[in-house]
Amino acid sequence: MKNIKQIIKVLILTTLLFSSVSKAELLDRIVAVVEDDVILDRELTRETYNIVEKLKANNVMIPPAFILRKQVLERLVVDKLQRQLAEKSGIRVNDEMLRRSVSDIASRNGLSVEQFKQELEGQGIKFSGFEENIRNEIIVNQLRAREVGSRIKVTDREVNHYLETQGEVSKEKAQYHLGHILISIPEAASSGVIKKAREKADKVVADLQKGADFKQMAVAVSEGGNALNGGDLGWRGLGQIPTLFVDAVAKMNKGELAELIRSPSGFHIIKMLELKGINKHIVTKTRARHILIKTNELIDDAEAKQRLESLKERVEDGDDFETLARSNSDDKGSAINGGDLNWVGPGDLVPPFEAAMNKLSINEISDPVQTQFGWHVIQVLEREDRDNSAEHKKNKVREEIRKRKIEEETELWLRRLRDEAFVDINLDRL
Figure 1: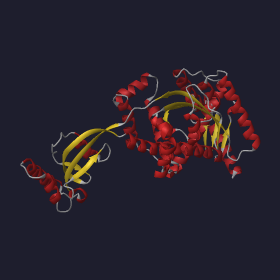
Figure 2: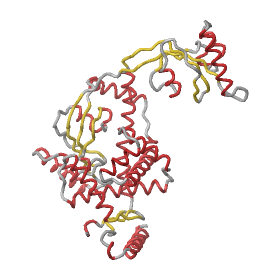
Figure 3: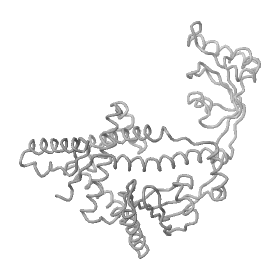
Figure 4: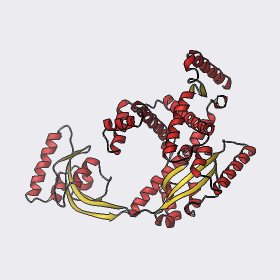
């Protein structure tokens, strides 16, 4: 297999080099062969420039050029491997999906797509290049969801165990802003390789304790996914922090470094950048009831809507909603209770129903509302704000455990993808 891949590599090199004109020869120089594709020097130079601009914007000192280029090239290699796998797996992003994503990004920035485009181009960023980056990001996210996310399960037992073991810390409602540096170890590494990695990690810790800038150190030496962001993991609740970091992080104060942490990926250096608390989670709960008329071969949309308008008029004329729901509603689960849906919160009901319900005053009855289940009239009976912290915490814990598992598995999956691929780095030959 290796011989075949070497032959492919030679063919790729030969084709690219001989097809280049002399003026573009330097620009088209190959810095890495990644499976059956290549990374060119101009790609590396362009991405390095983009990273340098981001580091400058974040006031992070730029490491030596050869170190930065090596880090950026490694990111390009891993990105290309993911896109190659996505292509082989048939993952595609059509123009409509891309258009919606760009529109969402523009909207979150308070701009129309055209205004957003002008803003980017005013900063020297080509809109077509931005769209391509978003397309690649969506493709990679879909790939990771399939390869990693689809296999992640969180049980009630895990949620309850977390709440039992981390409950006291959770009550403090603390959030942590962490810095992370990874000195990686290949799978099945020899004791000599592990020892060398440990020595490197110890030296990094010693330098940091002497006052070295954490972000600059992360950019220069870290092999983690956040290296080029200065190792910044952002703000996280305890449940969002990888399991192996939790015990150390819960005891740390601002500015402290944790003791070196070992995992299958390598040696981790963690710094507590900042700490802050969390407020209670208050939600608006609504008690509502409804009457549902489903459409079928005999009842079309117009007929269903007309029946509900008639029922609404009867209620307004004094008939009992509860009695009418029992005898007319096609939602048999709620009909037996007079159409009562009990107390519901945000996200409990389908969006069209919830949107119509939220517009109603107490005891007000809606006009007919269509959802995927049929046509409804809705009446709001009560509404109140409640402290939903306990339930919210459980849901958050479940989601945080899932994110943590995904993060841990993704790190290992990427490392495996990189280790098993044919990659020939030519950077030191430039």
